[in-house]
Image (cartoon, rainbow, N blue to C red; front, side):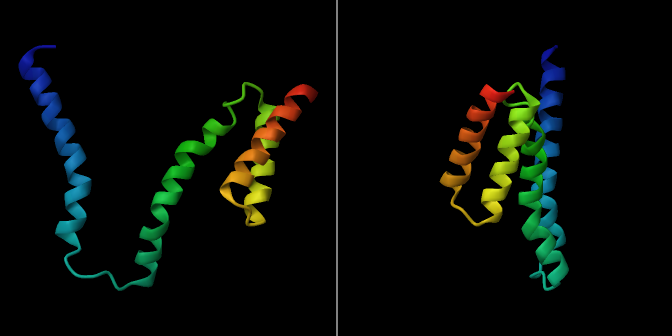
Length: 102
């Protein structure tokens, strides 16, 4: 890749990165009062994080059965309002134990 092509690529990457950050500031100058938009914007980071990490959960252990067992235990513990340490420890122990069974 030549220097002008590399410079153009860097410029395009900077532009693509800058637009999503600058556009909301330019469009929404006033405070957002809609409950729907506020709740949507509140949950977007959680949804994006879940959609990026959840598929990798099933490939993390090398065996789909242990991954499913660990995920089910983690979801049940989280649903029961356990702390993050308890949820993580429960999932790890479940994967470890089911690794011997399957």
